[in-house]
Image (cartoon, rainbow, N blue to C red; front, side, top):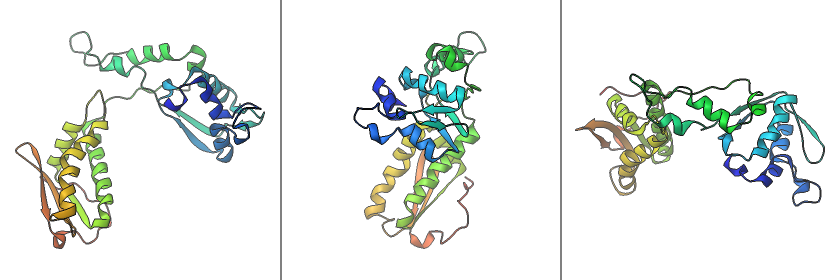
Length: 243
């Protein structure tokens, strides 16, 4: 929602008033829901939007309708609205005070109360705080990134296999309780994608092949094999192999 930080950005949601530029174009929110009345509306990082956007959403959450600048009423009764927020993330990242405490309890709730008005909070059905991801979930994220990379290399006839030890190494290096799993993409870029780039153009993988990812001496190791070693077909995504 960082695109809606300015006051005038509200007109993008419900349309510009009569006489203003874009009056005949309608609003992104009202037109979108009018065309897809049964949908899930995700408002990412809602705290970055202008407070006037909150006022627009009050009508949606209270009455299930929203009126655009043309006077047209759009039905939101079959729309599930989900809002994400980083409010309180900075406070949660700070070290907790006291023995045996590794999290700052109640900081997220206090941050939400500071950020959003009482009338806005009272219209929310529930506020869900997310805990740090467990290790097994992070491993699934690693596999997701690897499968995405393999899909990109499919046209070059390159397949990827990875040991569970390598996946665990990437998970440990790429996940941070404060930043979440976002750094994981950069770790895979640095340790897998970059080393493969030259091999794909001029090296062993120029005609396809198999990339076997493992760990040696606490570093990612890539074993490259020619196209004759590549898996010809498979009916499901590859599972992580044993170390």
